[in-house]
Length: 460
Image (cartoon, rainbow, N blue to C red; front, side, top):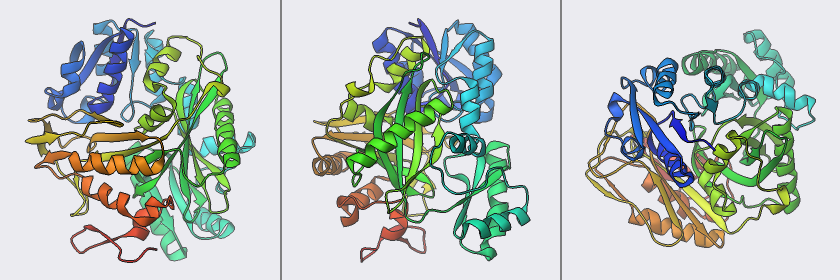
């Protein structure tokens, strides 16, 4: 087992890893930007090293500074969390070359899964069901027109190196295709430094189902069930739950088995997530593989009782998986609500600033992952996620009730947050019935003139 780990991240994910390290008896080293000098992860870590100025390009994405900090601290491994350098194959290679263990998959697996077009081709050869789409990246507008005609509208243009909803545009006809194509290219270039895009048939009203997998270096691969991540706004997840409602046991088993085949196809090691779209006829299609810990991992931990961060560390240290697939048991229902410092009444404008009043929920069945505290100032430079509320109960109805209670207890002021939106989502009859899809927000809410999401009077 490692003695000292550097955490190349910030905020609540850094705290999540620090806590796992402490319980494993591992010394933790935090890195921070000048803007995060007073952040909670800096206070909780055993050691902390400043790696640069506020912009992430000068700190959390500054590979030389991160590696220098690791060498100064004399760590054995680096945990990248999610975002920033978590899916950067070059960073993983540099860690290896410096004799520092990267807590994640091998660089070649990151590179293969990270290029969405390349990953699709690998899955096609492995017999994994994929959405009809281009085999290679689309070179120009003429090819885009040809492919759209072949697959039929609507189509979706995606960044080959994409993620997080960036570089994704839907076109419903010829008139919209070129603007969608050019916009997707521009967004991909800005977000990932790679303007390559590919085209897929756009599946109408699908469910977004993802499978958590664990794999060790000895070839053992298991899955830990599914998460339903269908509640999204502009391709950004808002709420996740496990298990997914409406899946037959046969379909649930097939998707889980397929996820392990995906992991095997890219020779995967460590924790990862395979994402699928499921249509109204229960057909499912491989969408992508995220080669890192997911924001929504706590719902899987709740229903399985397995600490995913500890398992990441154990696998990276060379240990074998401690379970076979038949050992995994699922209990109860878990829901996670992401609390962002954004104003849902004004087009989700970011709401940085000082938190003067803070009350986080507690009581039975409630977990909160957060890095904020009274007097903490939310900086404007990074992701707006400030807390995750996770509940676990014997069934979905009780989980919804527990989440409603937890949200009502939560006070974060004067900054604006998305708590009110979650309360509205949980109250919608279609959500309570488990009738969710990636179009849920669009069908259940309308946008006012000032950009506020307002509930539709009639169910769609």
